[in-house]
Image (cartoon, rainbow over all chains, first blue to last red; front, top):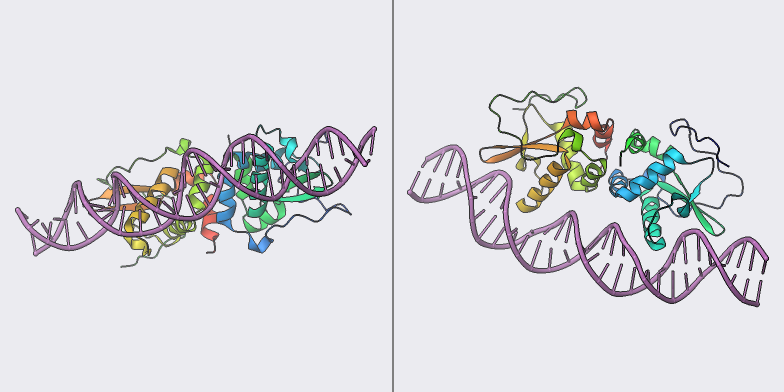
Length: 123
Length: 123
DNA sequence: TTCGCAGTACGACTTGCATCGTACTGCGAG
DNA sequence: CTCGCAGTACGATGCAAGTCGTACTGCGAA
């Protein structure tokens, strides 16, 4: 079940599969704010989430549970919402679960080099 | 009295003039933390300070007053200390005044591309 | 030595955020 | 229909940070 992940630099955003649900509300590319993005990444847990999503994601998006984070569900909801509202991740509701991926194209376009910093982050 | 500022990308850190006071306490290059740096930059006023220091500084460092910020002095003390403790700026005490500059070399070495994002920031 | 000034230190207030428990929602399996 | 589960919503709590007034410090000029 594990397809080999491409390097994130080579993985431009995947085409959206037909019939995928609409993304949850998020800021448009032009509305992304560098301070807000950096504020979202100033929390180590959120930095970890984005970095993991960037480096270890496969062909499909991932649910909150996939990360194996040892925090209550309500805390994860909070952090994922923070990341989405800052524009770092896109979330779609697939039936029961909410799946996330990094907005690679938008972030590269607006803040070139930022994701490279995240990828190089050492805990 | 305005010498032409070089572009920040061409201005590697100036040699320290002989007899300059020691820098105030700051994290060493290896101790810089990306989350902390981003946390410091998540405040628009601090982002503005760093960007101004990066783009409009001259051959010498600058005092808090130079920025012409319309805030009480105690607020500025707070923000400059935050920037110094996160490792973004270096501060030296010259008699009465405390002068600051961006730690260009350290930041470029540890977080390449980060200062370019700051320079491109639009208020 | 006296004064003015740059900046600090301290403390109070307020706001925002992280954390988490609990109740709830809504889809899908059986 | 009923149950279980992923995740949300809500609210309480505690803490960290932003804001700012006031008192203070310490250098340098007159």
